[in-house]
Image (cartoon, rainbow, N blue to C red; front, side, top):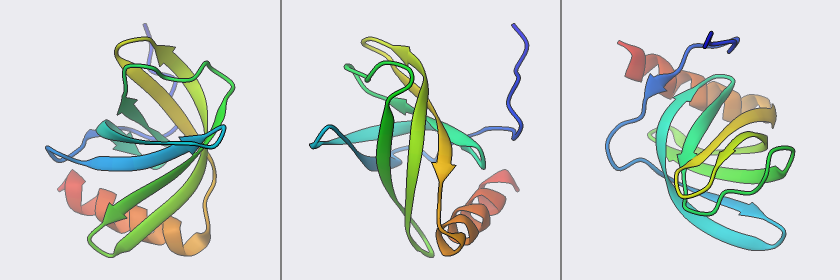
Length: 103
């Protein structure tokens, strides 16, 4: 299968955890990989594709908050999400961290 992503993904550092929320429920999950367009979150009970979630990720430069859409959902495995909204400051912090990881 071809990778149709606009941005490449890189493996996340071991132990990278983020907080995410949908329908009033809060969760903590491990991040498998990430890129400027989105990330893959490991979770046993991912919401279905089309669901919007709020994300909070701590990076060395501070917190990154974003809104994302679930694009891929695999029960007992995880979900691929695409960023749909992120403040400029959050995007800059995330991009700086991603650049550091890509070296």
